[in-house]
Each structure stands twice: as C-alpha cells, then as structure tokens.
Length: 106
Length: 129
Image (cartoon, rainbow over all chains, first blue to last red; front, side):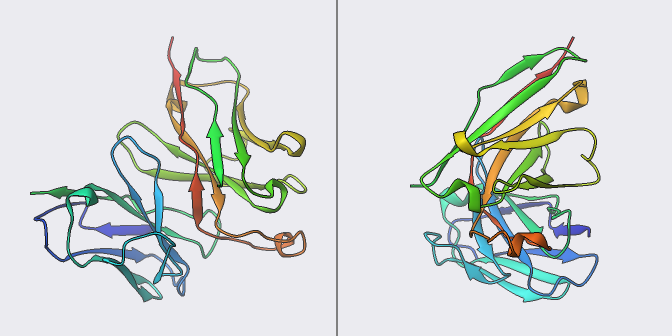
C-alpha cells in the first residue's frame, strides 16, 4: 500500500491552524498512525487508529479520516512543532510510511 | 519506564558483516512485537520488519527480505538486526521500536499490527571503503 502525503513542505506561523493530508492507494479503514520526528531525534507517535491521541500528546494535535483519506491537524501551531510528520498504514504488511511532510515555522 | 537502548554507531567496509542491538527494559520483553525502521540520510522512514520475542516469529518487508536478519535473545531482553555482507547503500540510521500494546502468542499467530509507541535512539551505520 502506497501512502502519499501533501504537502511535502509546509511553512506556517505560530498560532496558525495546519493540516496535513495522507492518501492511501487502497482502502485501509482506520488503520493509520501519525508520527512526529523532530530534527536529530527518533520519531514519536502522535495519533493511532486515525483519530486516537497517544497519551501525553498535546490536545492541539488531532486526526481524522477513514478509508483512503486522512488528515492530521495542529489547531494552533507552536514553535516546538518544527518537525517532519509521517503517516503509517497498519492495514497490511509491510506497514508502509508516507514520504513525510516537513513543517517549517515562519 | 519503557526504554529501548540501541548499540552505538558503526563504521564498516563493504562486504563486512554487522549485528546491531536493541535492549528493552521496563516492560515484559517477550510479549511486545519489536520492529526495525531504516532512515537513509535526509530521507524518510522505511518499515523493515517486525519480530515477536516470545517465539522469534519474524515478518519482513519484501524490500528487506534476504538482505537482513532479525533475531532476539529473550534472556537478555535484546533484539538484533544483522547483515552478512554490507553494501554502501546500507548506510542509514536504524531504529528499533516497540508496538504500543502487548499481544499473546495466539493473537500473534495471525496478522497483527500496532503503531510503534516506543523508539530507540537509533544506530547510525556507515558503510564506506
């Protein structure tokens, strides 16, 4: 299953609402996770089952969607959100990742 | 506290063998699937495969099948990723990561998947002549 994220690069200001889209090449119900990878660090799980917030993740992050189209939303961008964001499908092996969305803070 | 601690950076020559490790602590090692993820320099994440420590059931991505071998030593709570003959194209950072939830041996006999909720710090492998 191929995942396509859009946009690949995003520049936004502190306080902005940011949305990243992930499209799957096949139907995957809600079997999708989102990760954040800050520069030089290991990825961290943000969202699983398309919309369930992982424990400890700030509530400004949310996920939605099912089937083939999913979104990750940051309701009010913070400086510490500078990172690359990846979606991952958990429907079939291999559990592929999207190509990533690099988020820059203006 | 759940921790995954990986072995240190490696510099190898093409054709050499290598085994890197990932030691788990703070949880029941045998009942949580562990996966390996490759990140080539400046690139995205690639799912390599997963292994279930209880019975060493390993499932590989077709892209990595035959190129690497995953294994575990339950007595040491440690997972391993090894190469028999490295290539320059294996230069990357390799992460181990643990499934969010535990799975029983019965559950793990079929398709099982879960997000990676805990990650190691990564091991940088550089292959150059």
